[in-house]
View 1 (cartoon, rainbow, N blue to C red):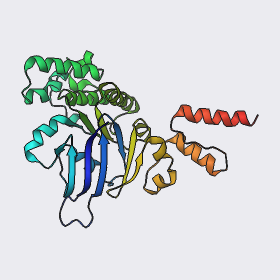
View 2 (view 1 turned 90 degrees about the vertical axis):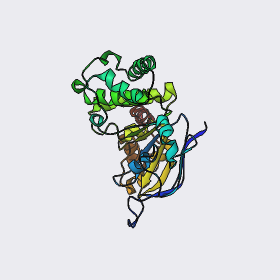
View 3 (view 1 turned 30 degrees about the vertical axis):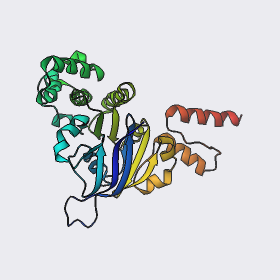
View 4 (view 1 turned 135 degrees about the vertical axis):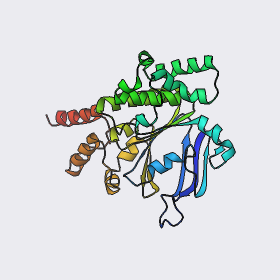
Length: 281
């Protein structure tokens, strides 16, 4: 996979007089077609990092390149935002029409896409997020999870190469979170869309190919989910939890139980515990 996003020694301050930068010399590469989650406590810089991906913010120092485009190049801003779509916490802030299909059509209409192509994009986007049957529904009658899927469909209709999601499930109930995460994972695996997702839910982070952990504007851990979540004490030291299954195995290891692996899912944890019980018979 080729690099799609590159942060090169990026620092950022919201005001010149700030004593500490919000982003502090960030170097990060994201490959095309990958699924990356970014974790960090409030104030760690993760949402600021996300806003650099489609030039909502641009670096105070350093460079950000997306698909070869310098995000600070104002002449390329329109081109950049066709490549990278943003989905935020509250879907109500992104839904602009009262009818679902009209909302999904809004962005391509503003891009000057021909009507026949808009119709195809709307249908394809709604099918991709599993919301085709709601195309004529009133958007304000939808559940939180359904609204967020419509917000994602609205971004998909622009046909971006990358979708950046800033805590997209933070305002949803467990069922809504499950619906949205299934949609995100399918878009990555089946459509090959690059996903960068900011989250504070550990069980969402483990679905990604790669986990990046931030603290005080810097990247402190970066690797696959099993690698990152094996650093339980380091994660706790920067104010983060770990998946409950990982926590349980960690506590058993500390109690002297001989376990030599990191587990993330309920199934893996059950297998390890079953093996321990069988070994004691």
